Image 1 (cartoon, helix red, strand yellow):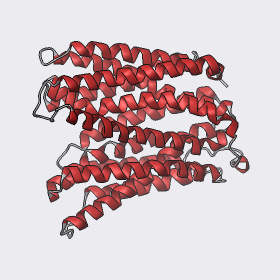
Image 2 (cartoon, helix red, strand yellow):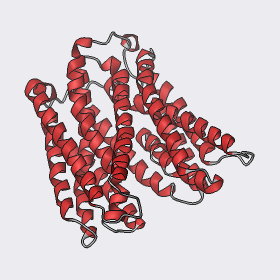
Image 3 (cartoon, helix red, strand yellow):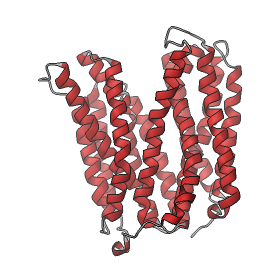
Image 4 (cartoon, one colour):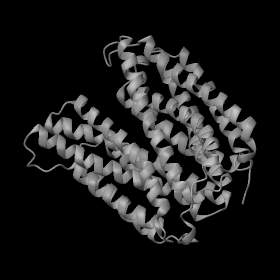
Length: 403
């Protein structure tokens, strides 16, 4: 349920908030975009800090102590954000209000997310149980994205407010009922810096692959509507197909990959994703509906990628015996992911603008198709090369291990 809650605010934050403040107050979309981008970068920096604080919390209820309050603050902040008071009278007040509560939501979501990522490592030592927990978390995260993105497009924010409050209550009850972790007195140990190089070597290709996913996500709707000439609703349907396929992909690959070397499995997933992107070069406005096949295929493998990237980090942390410092390590990983999202938007859109592409105006622009398809292929190829190098040196870390 934790994955369901955090995903219910992450995506709608960038869908519902601009809609509310542009429609109701006539604010500039560019101004709102800059504020959201700045807060995203600020939020990224706080993730390692929260990770360190979580690691230093000496309590058998440490994760309950972090997830329940941060989840509650996140929900309260979000309800306030999408239901602004009527007394806001000028642009400065409106922007200040939006920025303040967006920062509250993002910061609380960061603490919540780092806690639920670190939880499996410190709650159980069994690799199979950790895999099961990560799988369920990612499945519920995708369900949350699907449901929340659907509700966030409604003109009535009360539907989304009710849904979010209900999920928060159910999640809090569920979290408080879970067993406590063991050995709280051993929760704080010094990070073993001799393993930092190995950790960086695995995070680098994971970050590059995640950057490829972020770039594709940034340009998805532009590619669908302005290059394939499909409607906005078609784009929404394709996005739903993609997420549902990813959800099915986690379930499909979970039991299979637990018996394989994790890094070799991840390399296979990256390779297949590259292959599936290639047919996109033959698509255009005349056969654009065939793009749904690519959405299904890439969705199936991105689900596996979500599961395997977490398991690669978990196995590396366990190999370096840094389970008790998993919060700061996964917080640093969260920082990289958020920087990747900011970098994808900050590079792809300006590059297309320099190339002469204007959303909704320059249709079937070849540069749009080239960047949307070639960008992820190139980045994932680089990731695959780095993964192969890492596998040759440290592949033994990722051998299947049930205990």
